[in-house]
Length: 133
Image (cartoon, rainbow, N blue to C red; front, top):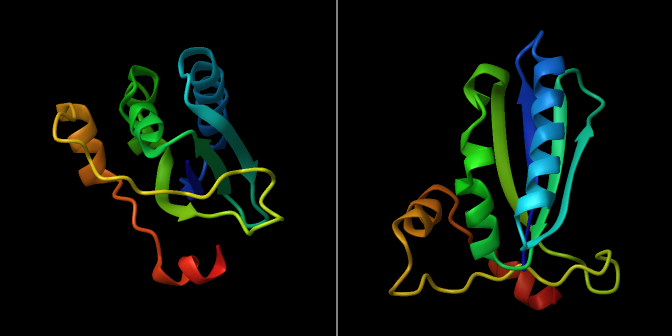
């Protein structure tokens, strides 16, 4: 499984456009992707702060999502001031039923799109997680 928390900051005045993009992304993701487990957007307390909780059956499903036509078809540069993707792992017994985030090796026969996604969104499991599994 691959679970991420996206920390998002939107440009002032772009909130309505951003929220329309979010609604489209959620609709298209659930309609066209088989590997999505959770995909939720939230407003933060700070002005123009948003969060997205994304969980996919594996990192390949996440990479497919990132490289999808509906993801690539939006003008994120127009609305995003900043975004940080943080891979997260569930706390045993308190993770909402999500499986641990795992980082399998890229297969030798991986497509060009998967290789690009691996370069853009590398997954790295922090060493301290292993003691907390």
